[in-house]
Amino acid sequence: MSRFLSDRLQSLAPYVPGEQPKVSNLIKLNTNESPFSPAPGVTEAVKEAAGSLQLYNDLSASRLVGLLSDTYGLEKSQIAVGNGSDEMLAFAFQAFGGHGLIFPDITYGFYPVWANLYGLDAKIAPLDADFNVDLRDYRGNDRCIVLANPNAPTGKALTILEMAEIVENNPDQVVIVDEAYVDFGAESALAFVPQYENVLVVRTFSKSRQLAGARLGFAMGHEKLIDDLNRVRYSFHPYNVNTLTQAAGAAALEDPRYFEACRKSIIETREWTREQLLSLGFRVLPSSANFLFAAAPGVSGPEYQQRLRERNILIRHFDLPRIRDFNRITIGSREQMEALIQATKELLA
Ligand SMILES: *Cc1c(COP(=O)(O)O)cnc(C)c1O
Image (cartoon, rainbow, N blue to C red):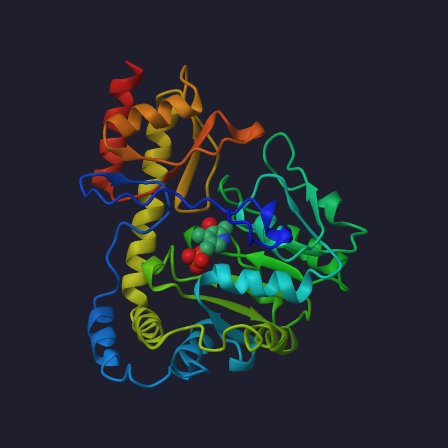
């Protein structure tokens, strides 16, 4: 820290991303990336787009937004794209968190960081003993609500009826639903967008569309909410989604069969892995995401992580009070998960 850093930032605890090691022989199950390559059309599309990099990118990302509009059945004016969903969420926090925010104690670790960065008051609503959202926390509420659904790192999801209760009980608050993992089996709040003016659904190409490194996310909501996000964007960085990323995203959307095949494979492999871990005596939460949240029998959370690391397998541990026994294990390919199970059997033996 230099002596020049603004006072306000000195106490900030930045988000700590999962490790991105440079060595290549690791089985990387620690940051919820897809084990599959981008859709086959992506490389060619990016190559072609590179030919016009001397020009600024399309501010309205019209082709990409048009494809999102077709894919999700919304108007273009109900969609905004960003540099990863992290950027969309950061814009939403700034736009709608002015009178405070509320989110669970166990959830995406970036939420409290943004609240601090932007000087917003955050109320923490603890999940219950089984890591479920307590709907009562969101009744009579006067803050912007932020819910990851499915939640991270638990993988647990709210049903559409539970979401409806939260949305209908809070007509004067924006409900931000972070659906980074929704494609892996949860019910989406997207159906509320045409009906309610207070729902903002945020999604990403990082997890289910094989494009984490491209940095592409999007928000869907009432056109006035989207206008508000653009207000923040045009006050910060209007050219937020570069030409190559727009092309990559469009090519991914143009291949729904590849998307479906990857998604289906990950869901199947998740259920296989869950059965295996349960039969080894793990506690495994039910998951609607591309990861499992699991506690190993007879070894601590950090110890399980460390012993897998010695066998070149990375998983993610969060050193937080209620979840120290658990690790978050990304679902990779079937071969990778077989290696995880084999290593686990050895280290528990
Ligand atoms: C991965 C993740 C994001 C961020 O996704 P990017 O689009 O890569 O920025 C947002 N929310 C949750 C809950 C995530 O797990």
